[in-house]
Amino acid sequence: MSAATFLDARGMTGGYGAADILHDLTMTVAQGEIAVIVGPNGAGKSTAMKAVFGMLPLRAGSVTLDGQDITRLSPQERVARGMGFVPQVRNIFPSMTVQENLEMGAFLRRDDIHATMEQVYDLFPILRDKRHQSAGELSGGQRQQVAVGRALMTKPRLLMLDEPTAGVSPIVMDELFDRIIEVARTGISILMVEQNARQALEIADTGYVLVQGANRYTDTGAALLADPEVRKSFLGG
Ligand SMILES: Nc1ncnc2c1ncn2[C@@H]1O[C@H](COP(=O)(O)OP(=O)(O)OP(=O)(O)O)[C@@H](O)[C@H]1O
Ligand SMILES: [Mg+2]
Image (tube, rainbow, N blue to C red; front, side, top):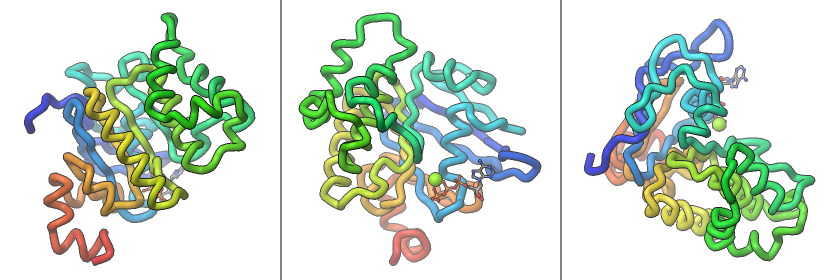
């Protein structure tokens, strides 16, 4: 790996109750790189994201961010350390305006958030036009932009996205992926779950294929796309 490892989630084992969902799961993301998690429905992709963000009690394993062990920290403490998380569902406040959503994203900050908000509006210009509209009135793709923008308001160094392109058209998906690449180029690491596996692996430095809460395949995005077994079982041939 060329860049330094920024997130190192290692040997994660745990679940919601008695039965474990994650089994010795390991995922790393280098600085400024894009890591993509794919796998069938129910494989534990969202659970893995929750574990990295501190929303799931781990029976074993560790999470290290920028060389510091954060395994025991709360989600809020992880945000303060540089994690931003866009969950799969309920990732915006629909009755609040676009701008209020962005302000909510910055709730932990005590400094001036104006410049960051301008950066979000530069990344997603449509949000600047619609900043006084309720987020719930926006299209699906625009709502996802609000969700990503909200996470960017804390100035994260690791941005975690759970299915950012769910329910949007192929064109909107391509646009969102372009913006995500743009964010990564600024040095922010990306850890992203994607249902659009083939397209997501095309922009992935590293890809993780999860099955039943465990690592099945780990390689560069390009290598996974070229692997006949991966193609046959997980990419529709
Ligand atoms: N809050 C919860 N409490 C108990 N079990 C849960 C909870 N959330 C998820 N599970 C279970 O954990 C397993 C993994 O679910 P998870 O949502 O992580 O899968 P996923 O890979 O994200 O699926 P999808 O592609 O549908 O989003 C499933 O068996 C699911 O039923
Ligand atoms: Mg999920």
